[in-house]
Length: 282
Image 1 (cartoon, rainbow, N blue to C red):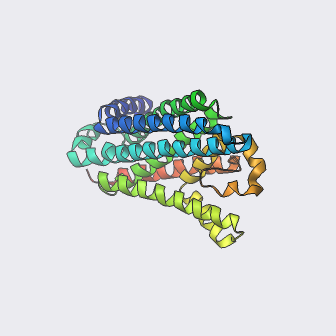
Image 2 (cartoon, one colour; image 1 turned 45 degrees about the vertical axis):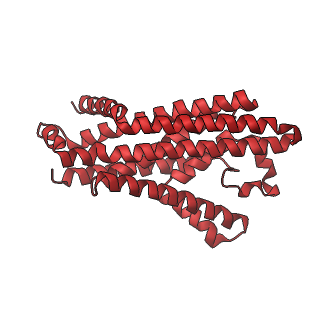
Image 3 (cartoon, helix red, strand yellow; image 1 turned 180 degrees about the horizontal axis):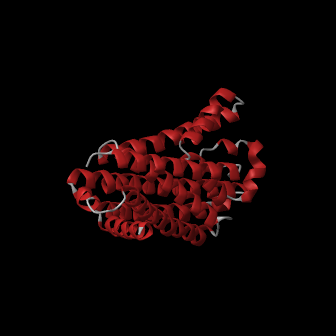
């Protein structure tokens, strides 16, 4: 009974997300970004006559990661602003009361909505990310060494943010939950850049800013793992040259421990969302 409820709610949530206007906005922004990146990569390729092979790898990997960050930001915006209305919007409109008046567990509804949003976010990342990788392949002849791993990490990043959005939507309005989630996403990324600067300067106090932020909200850590999967492996050998200080290059892959922490983080935050939703007055 619970499994059927979860799968039914997940399917309905996925169908509802596909019908929302935010999907059209996501599609437009994605097409524009892909078109601009195709033009940019073609121009970059035209200038490769003056680049060494090492410079070409640095340029290609950096620009690819820059565009992938744009896609991850679009996915973050979409899922964050979908998570709020999906839960809090239904509570405010009275729709949730009509559904939960039946013998249906609130936790099952919440998990079903979460699964639907995860499927939506993961599907967007897979389609848009694959399109971008193909553009790079056609325009520059470069193919990321671990594309599946990179896209999977971006999908998990999306899942982290929408889980946070669901938790926030149990306490504040749909719009506010989306704004706070995206704000924390940006703040964590900036803290990660600050931490990288601290590492480059051998300043442990500043470097700790990035470490702590990645533990509190794993989005930046997952993003750095995705960058490492997309960039040329030879760049790791040039870390002493200073390119490791770039915010769009990552010199080390994610550890199994960090991935386990991310899974635990998602489970704990989703559990807190379920408890908060269970206690909320409808």
